[in-house]
Amino acid sequence: MENPNGGHDLERPAQITGPGPGTRQAADPSAVTPPPALRSRRSSKSKRRDRGETRPRLTSATGIRTDRTDRKSLLDAETKLVYGEEQDTAQQLRESLASPASPLKCQGGETVGPASAPTPPEIDEWLRAALQDADACYRRKKYALAAVRFTAALQLCSRGAVFGDLVSADYEDVTKAVSFIESRLAACYLRMKKPTTALQHSLRSIHLNPIHLRSHLQQAMVYRLLGKPCRAVRSAMIADYVHWLCRDGEAHISKLIKLYWQGLLEDAITMEDDFSVLYTPCFGKPTRCLVLHAEETFRTLHPAFTTYIFTDPHGGHVLPHSTDWSVSAQHYVLTLGFRRRQDGDFLDKLLHRKCPTFTGPHAPFVAPDCSSLPRMCETLERRILPVLDFISCTKLTVGLSAGSGLIERLQYADCLLQLGRSTLHTQELQHVLAELALAPYLQELSPTDTTQLQALMADTVDTLEDKRTDRGRVWNAMQTVGLIEDMIYKLEETYLKTKALKATRKQKASLRKSLKDAMVSPPKKRTTLPPSPHGASHPDPQPGTNPGGQGSEPLSTVLLSPPLTSCTPQPQR
Image (cartoon, rainbow, N blue to C red; front, side):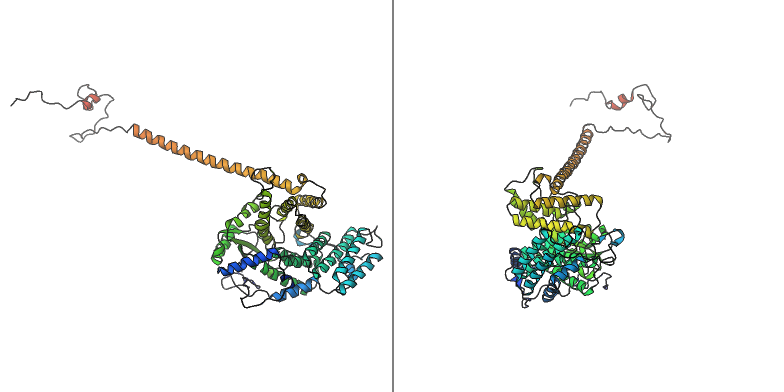
């Protein structure tokens, strides 16, 4: 939709406003005891409201404000997507096995996959009985007992009781079956209001079957309950893409996912206190002129967040209302403005170097000591990872290098392990493992990226199983390369500064010398001859001769001789 100024307005909220002080939100069971991170955000929002400051807003390049998504509509869409039509568990498993093989992205935007769905294999009798028993408990709303039954079904799978003919079974079918049971476990723990345990099972389900739609929706709900809206937005975005990738013809499901995605994005932006956001439409790679125009527009719309402004140089951000995966989606350039410079100044170094080391120690190649390790972990948790999560929540392809959030999260997991926080360490590694398993479905990988992906997945699995030391991990090697690169940058900067200083000193010394020489030896005076009486020009005098031509007395004697005076003595009075 075009506006009178020639820009493109957004159909959905271009700028988000919160509810008035007298309005009430729909009751949310998860909001009874919010997590610590959510409580701190709410307290900071109340302090900001008391100071009379405005909250960060989602803004398009035109600056149009509309109403935000209804909270009740968001929760209703979440319930329909996460739980859906609860059919028979065994039947759902057969439908999951009968789904087409996972299509991967190829060059030219094509997809590769079989034209028809394969015949699903026969499920083992013991596994079918266990799933039916668990499903019966789930339908009677005995979710704890259903979780125990689904766990028993997982144990049967680990013993080989998956299909009747396990020898000829395909590996992908086995992983689909186990992934489905993990997703049912996640649904049980979500019903019991245990999002932390549900997150572990949803991450395992995505790792085993990255294109399982229900697992991504469950992950979005879990992150919303845990007070991590940016991760919830990314999970909803990936769910919408997976729904299109699997070529599901149900258009109302895609519309419902986009509505859920939009609501989560609005919540993510309104909960941020340290920065504000601007999305500018972009066609192709962002140019320097477009970046300058976006930053100037941001300064006009958000003058309170102009201490430090950063624009993503790569672009490629998508919004739910303008995204159609079947055609070329509308891309946007993201501009972030921070209240404090130290909250975002790491982004320039992070996204313009191959292996940055903004989290490393001050002394190169020296492991952080016990005193600096908590500070380093807090910097990653509070300052760096939230910004990277927000950048990636509207960007489908984030890559595998530094700045994607994966390498930084692996470093954060190392810090958690050294601090003895094993539960969060395992959770972060499982999150990274699910993202790595999903990466080939979201972007085209070069041979170098494929090698790096395999190495990162192998090291992450070995770290979860305690099979590898810190010296053999890929992200530690990347950090070492980053330290070397950082040292080279510093040496180059020091050399250029020293060279410029020497050139300035040399120029000043030359100027002082020329001034001194000018003061010591002043220029000689030139002699002018009287004009000729007949108007004839004087001949050029010979060196050392009188220009008058009379006698042979030197010119110097004539010019320097004192004037003649009378020698007659004056009479005395």
